Every structure is written in C-alpha cells, then in structure tokens.
Length: 177
Image 1: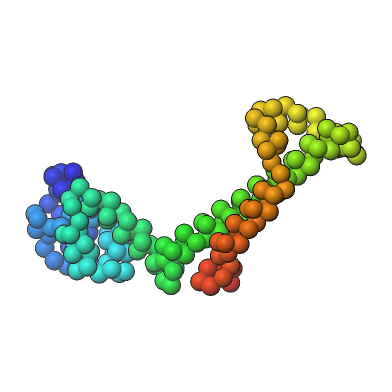
Image 2 (image 1 turned 135 degrees about the vertical axis):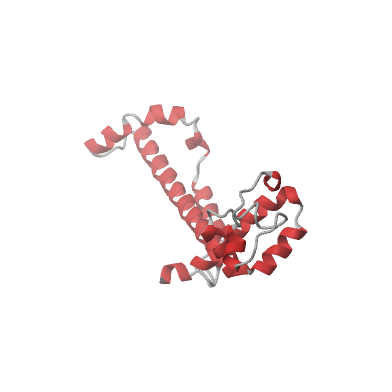
C-alpha cells in the first residue's frame, strides 16, 4: 500500500497548496505527492480539501488510491465541462459508439449487396469485378457472417439507435460548440 511507503521530508502537494505543515499522518500525502501539485489543485478546486479528506477517511485504505484517481478524473472532466462533467464525456462516447455501429451495419449491408451481385453475376463494371475478386476469400475468412445477415437486422439496429437518441438535451451541446 502506498501509505506505508517512506516519504520524503517535503510537504505533500495538498499541504503545500493549503499552506500548512504536512504531518506524518497526513491523509493526502500518499496520494498527492509534492511533485504533482496540479493533481491536488484540480481536485481541491472542484471538491474542496475538506470534502476530499472526508471521502478518503470513509473509504477503506486499500481502495483509497482508486478513489483518488476517480476524484482526479471527475475533477478534470468537471473543469473541462462545468455543466455535464463526466456524464458529458460518457454521452459523447455513447453517441460515437452508436454512430460507429450504424456505420458497421451500413458497411455490412453494402458488403452483402456486393456479395449477392457477385454471386448472381450482376457485377456491372470492371471496378466491381476487381473489388469482388478477393471478396470470396474474405467471406470465408469471416466465418460466413453474411449468410446470417439480413435487412431486418439493419432495421433493428436503427430502432435500437433511436432508443439512445443522444441528440436530445442534455446531450446536444457538443454539436453546438
């Protein structure tokens, strides 16, 4: 555990910022080293030293390092986005994931269409033929997922995407920036 590691005689980042003497039993010292002053400054600005101290006292010692890491992440997110903080970052990632899932469905549909055109001999241009040359090998390597793909799965993904419509408030702020 970090609290049992030997400390240097200098004050921790928290005590330096708060301009107080760092005692050997300082609750901040194991987690806010003196060479990382910005780490505590961010946490202090968002949560306050008193609240952070109370949180660390309530948390079991083996979980304190993870708690501090979480507080630092949340403070950084709150400083970047004062209104939504971590939730804004999570919503942005969820929206990106839905967009990528939609793109994947479209790519699979196009691939299925090209595979169907190739198997029926409808490939129209020389470019289509060149593109489809390696497609058979690719389909075998993919384990035949194309056989199980159908248009209803595309419809289902679109219905699922509507359920997580992140273009509504409070998530629309990213597009307006």
